[in-house]
Image (cartoon, rainbow, N blue to C red; front, side, top):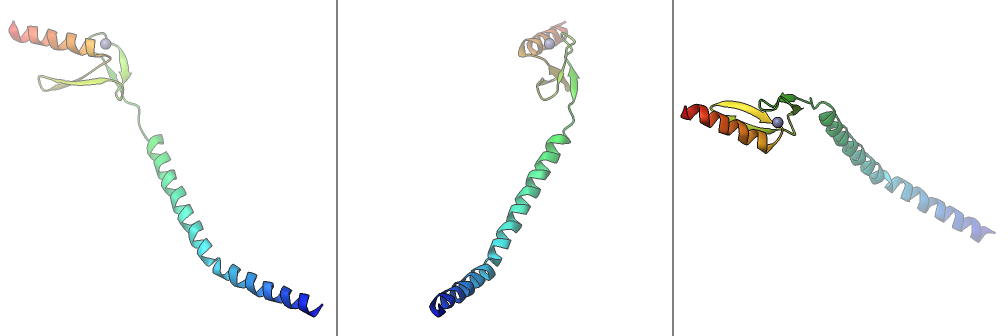
Length: 99
Ligand SMILES: [Zn+2]
């Protein structure tokens, strides 16, 4: 009986030491919380993105600025729904220069 009690006390002390050593585990939890904070900032960035709409001067279509094709023609910035519209507009502006 005494031997069993001795083992229990021994394991009790070992578990107690391991539990105290578990302080480093608390540090891991701290780094996890900072990772979660970073993810939160990324979510804020995507949520705060403003969807800008632009008008295609060729076909008059309204498209998202992120999906539009930007072209700088004669110092002015234009946005097109497709490369075809952009080429049409460039050809038209070139004809104006020729005339
Ligand atoms: Zn277009």
